[in-house]
Image 1: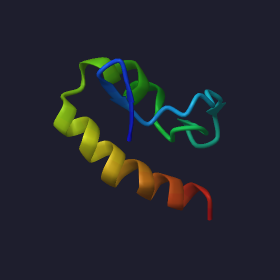
Image 2: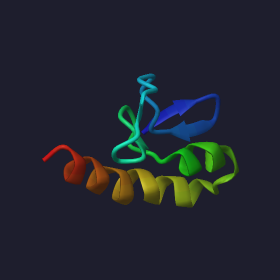
Image 3: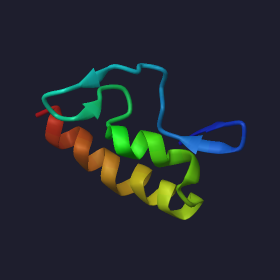
Image 4: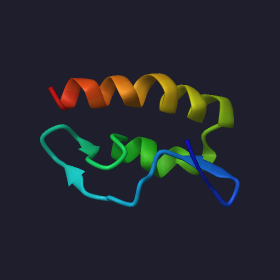
Length: 62
């Protein structure tokens, strides 16, 4: 988990959208997740980063 100005984020600075899978190829978040991230509670961000995004990455990189 990367901490930027007290904001935990999976962003790695590779902001390129994959329209086939509807996610960013750098962090594997959807546009909706990205746009709502700053309002997402910290515990939900952690859950997304620890559970949702790793599974999404595994599924999309097979």
